Image (cartoon, rainbow, N blue to C red):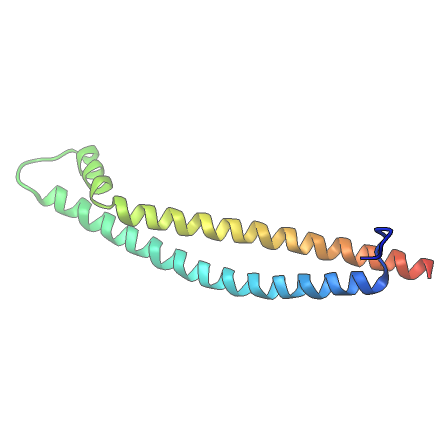
Length: 117
């Protein structure tokens, strides 16, 4: 940035290049996080279903609520991993949206600078 805090075309170009790098990094991170979320969701749902089936197959009659509660307790770790992976993915998508907004703002600023010069 120049000394008087006014962005010039070179400053804006540098900022756009940096945002482009951030965008590429985010796209890769989102791809990995989406895969991690899918894997953790699958692990959770399978573990939950197995725990529920085992609770229902136990001795005596059990209510649906009891089977569900048992499955919730048995799959607590898997559910935490799934919810964490989901939260990470949501945060990365929000970061991507913010990055895209900064790029749009820099493009607008660049157009303004070009029209002045």
